[in-house]
Image 1: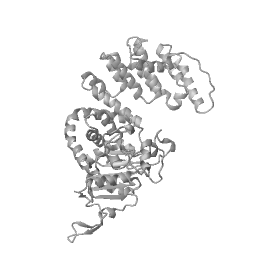
Image 2: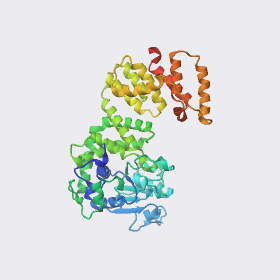
Image 3: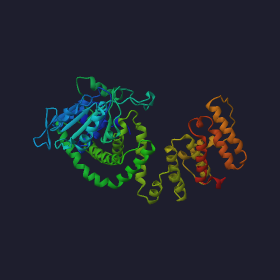
Image 4: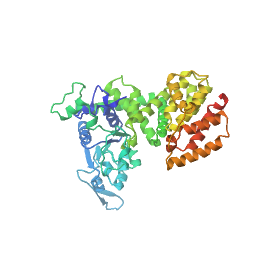
Length: 482
C-alpha cells in the first residue's frame, strides 16, 4: 500500500495545520494513546518540532523542549543538594527542569553526548530520572536528522539524500526504547496540494473532515479504550503473525530484539485502534499491521534505513502465511524455516499444484543469492516438469533459471590477467578432474559452473555454490528422475 496517498476521515496533523503528514496520523494517535515513546527522523525544516509543540498544546500538557545537542544533566534535574541527614538529595530546580513535565521532547537526540544518551534511557523507557519516578510524565518524544551513511552510495534508492555532519546513528539500545521510529516527509515527498498549503496564507481543508484541536484528548481516550478489546480479539493471530515477521526480518538482515517483537505486537493493535477512530469501521487490519511495521523498526534511525519495499514484502508474506495457519498441514509446512524444504514437504503431503506453485515462488523470492536461485530453479524444474502442472507464475521463473544450465550454448571471451584469470585457472583444473564423471549429474555440475563464469563467481564462491547445487539436486530427488 502507499501510505503517502492514504486518506483519513479525520486528520490530526491537518487540524493542527501541519501538511503532508496525513499518512502518519494513526501512528501519532497510537503513540499518544499508549503513551509509547516516539522518535521522528527527518530533514531540518520539516515541522517536527512544530507538530510536537502543537500536539502538547492541544492536549493542554506541560511540555519541556530540550535541545539534546546542548543539554547538560543539570538542565534536566537542577542542582543536587544533600539533605541534612546526608541520606538523600533534593534538587534546586528551574522552570525548565523535568520534574513537573507531562510531555518531554528531546530534539537533536542524534547529536547528544554518549554519556547523556545513557542518562536518557530510564527517562524514555521507565519515566525515571536519578532513580526517581516521574509521576506526571506521560509522553516522551524525540527528533533527529538522518545520519550520513559511511559510504555516500549506500543510501537506499528513493530515500532522501540529506547528510548531516554530527548527526550520528543512535546507540541501538536507545533506539530500541522507541516503539515508533517515524521517517517524516520532506518537500520532495509532499503532494502538489500539500506544497501549496505549506506556502499559502489560507488553509483549505475541503478534502478532510476537521476536528477541534481541543477534542484531541477525547480521540486519544477513545483510542486507548479500544485497545484492550482488540488485544483480546487478536492475541492468537497476532502471535503467529509476529513470530513470522521476526523470522522474515532476520532473513532480510533486519534482526530485532525480543523487546521489539513485543513492542511491534502492541503497536499493531494500537495503530488499528487509531485507524478505527480516525477512519471508522472500514479500516482494515492488513493495512494497520503494515503501517505499524513500517514505522516500528529501530533501523529507521540508522544511516541506511530499510527500504519500504523490503518491509512491505516482509509484511505481505507474514500476513499471507498467518492467514493459512488455521490449517494443520499448512502449519506443519510453514513451521519449517527453510523455504526449499517447505516445497519438498508440500509435494510429499500432496498439496495442490496452485499451493505448491505459491511455495515455489516464495522460495525463489526469499533467496538473495543469484547462484542459489539458479540452483533451486534447475532442481525444481527437473523435479516437477513431468508430474506437476504448476501455475505460469511458478513455471516461468523456473524455466528461465533452468535454461541457464540446461540449454547448450557456446561461449567465447578473453580472460584478462588478474582475478578472472585466477578464477578461470581454478575452474579449468576442476573441469579436468570432473570430466571423469560422465553421468547426467556430473554434466549438470559442469554446466552449472560454466554458466556462472565469470559474473556469478566474481560475487560468490563457486565451490560453495557447487556444493549447494549438488545438495539441492539431492533434496528435490533429481537423481531419481534423470
